[in-house]
Image (cartoon, rainbow, N blue to C red; front, side, top):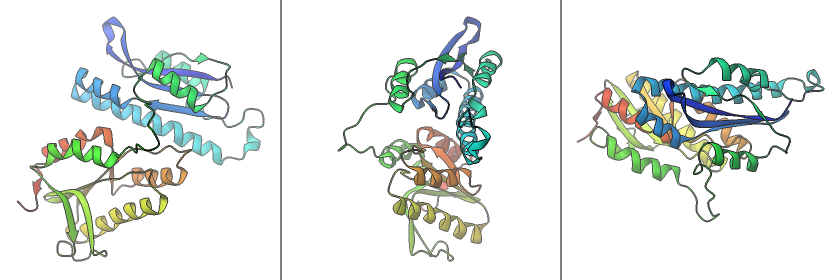
Length: 286
């Protein structure tokens, strides 16, 4: 397979053929890289209608899932089936991208494949992403400056929901008698017929701590549903890098796929705020 990259764009003025680049796909015979800019999605939110933006966001997230789920599936197949091609994910083949560049221009659009001969690396992908999509997306941080996804999400989300929920709430068996653990602290909790809870999780922390954080949320869901039936449990966070954090990525995927939880990308925190408002959620205690 030839190495190539393709730019993912969204039409913002179709009559003028004006596009806003939001993502980048790059692959060779054995590797595939795909990333989209959260900042550019924020720009689109101001430019598009609510329904159009929702469709674009879901489409981009579906593309990302399709790319990496397909690659994971192919990796499980006996490599002897592909003795000359290596591991090839059909969803991001050259022919597939060519097809999408011609026929998928109403909602999102891939550019025609651009071929290259240099070795594909994460650094190359990052540099090209900065040049073609968003120069601020891959900002290097010193080893002493740890990005606190939990703190930042809380700072942005709490002001939008604090009148409708209890924040930094410690749940005990006084509220749910079947709760196994002595207490579970959540970022927020409210109720309107069903309980609505939310917790931000850093999916790059050490495996044992992450496993405990995730397990607590499932324990909480079981306790809520055993006594109340329905619930809406949000988990906010960022998808960890699959190669750098393989175990954490599997835990993230388990959360993402689980029907009892609603995973929301931390940069899409307003989705939670809109749900709380639309459902007229009220605090448990004033």
